[in-house]
Each structure stands twice: as structure tokens, then as C-alpha cells.
Length: 341
Image (cartoon, rainbow, N blue to C red; front, top):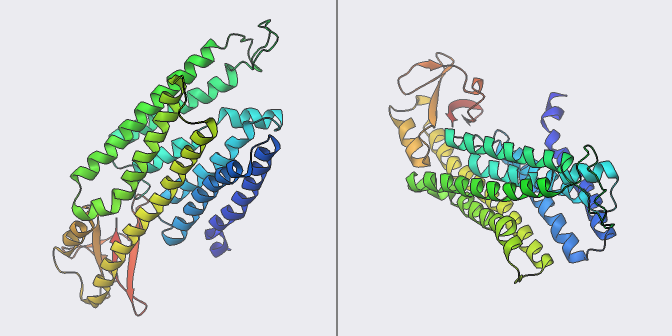
């Protein structure tokens, strides 16, 4: 039962497939062609599939669920179109674009899935407040189009007939989220500039993905509504936006695979040392080689039946700390060391 419970993320694949099929039927039902439908479906499938792939390779890494949730919210946002039930359509309308919130979170938290700096936590909280305000506005300030000209159509929940407040919130959201996304990209870029060469190698895909995502967001939210003559049609713009999010999902997977391959080499090296313990300072060398000063190498002591740090002091089991990921290193089924990061 425990093993089955630990494998539950595999269920995300059939769940995502079912939701994707329903979303595709929804789009086809309102007249979109197959190119539009397939590309829309590909975005959700890529994000969910990338999330499950990351979980399968590195289950302790929190990036996987951010990718998966972004994929599910992408599919769910499709149901705001005509043809959905009233409650489903309103829910999807209110939660529109939340997939971009989770992708921005992923950008800030890469490569561990944990926010590393206070400024990143402030940015994420500001984004969450902005998205929550937009969702509430879409529930309580949005006024459906009035084709009669009598200004008698009200919001579903409140006696609001003037759409100007809703329009103001939408405009504030467009500018606010664009600015916050640019600041998030700047935070990631600043870390990339200060990082060592190995760390840059690991984080470059995330930086590139973030730049693509922010550029697409800025165009969609700020530039496009203010350009009278569109150089691209609505569908062409949609294709560009879909392509940018597919690039984001794939780029994060590439970055995490780089992390895995680099650390795998370190794991093999440490395993080759055998059970003699780690020489003083080896943990610092490993951290510098990985470009991550938070890495700690703990050698296993058979005599003391505990993991030891560089100074020979016994430490608590590495997996006791929920904020750190652990890679256990064995040789011949016997523990050799643990790599925490």
C-alpha cells in the first residue's frame, strides 16, 4: 500500500489525457480548426508530461508538481468558452492565466523547486495577490456584454452594471504581472551572473525559458492590446504563445537533466572512494564543482552507524530536514555517503 501511494503521480498522465480530450472537444465545438486544437492540447500535455518525467527522475524535486499544476490549469482555462455549463465557464474564466503564475513560480524556484531568496518570496506573494484580485474581479465585477444597449445587464453576484471597474482591474493586472515577471527574470539573471561556471551550465535553460516566457507575456498583455494594426492575426499570436509555453516546459526538463547528470558524476566519484570516509574539505570541493555552496557531503561510518560531516561529527539522518533533498550513495548495497542539497 505504501509503495502504491508513493506512485500516485503516474495517475496524472491519464487524468491529464482525459482533461485534454474534454478541452479539445470544447474547442472543436466552438469552431476552432484542428491546428489550433492540437497546439492547445500539446501545451497541457507537455507541461503535465514534463512534471511526471521530473518526478520519476527526481521525486524529491518540487519542480515537478509546479509543471503538472501549470498543465492542468492550462486545460481548465479552456472551459470558459461558450458551450460549457454556466458554473464551469465562470470558474474557468475566474481562474484564467493561473498557469502563468505557476510557471513564474517555477522560474523563481529552479532548480530545487524551493525559493532561495527573500526577494523571490516577495515577488511570488505579490503575484499571488495580483492573481487573486483578478480572479475576484472576474467573479464580482465582470459584466457580460450587453447587446440591447439598455445598460441593464448585471454581474451574476452583485448589482454591478458598469464594466469600467472590471476593465481597470484587467489593465492593472496586465501591467502589474508584466512588471513582476520582468523582475522575476531579473532576479534569476542576477543569480546566473553571480554563479560559478558549473552553476551557469545548470541554470542556463531556465534563464532562456524565462526570457521567452516573459517576452511572450509582455507582448500578449501590454503590447498587443495597444497596437492598432496587428502584424499577426489572433490565431498566429496564440500559436506564438503556445510555442513559448512548450519551450518553457521542455527547457526546465533539460535544466533538471543537466543537474542530474552533473550530480551523477559526483555520486560515482564518491562511491569509488569506498567506505573510508570523505577527506576533510571534500564536501566544499563537491559544492564548488556543482556550483551550489549549500551541498553537504556526509560519509557513512559503519563503526558509529551514522553519517559524519567533514569534521567527523555525527549528524541527524539527512532526510529529517524537509527543506533539503538527499541523494544516498551506495556500493554493493552498502551505504557510502549522502549528498544533501
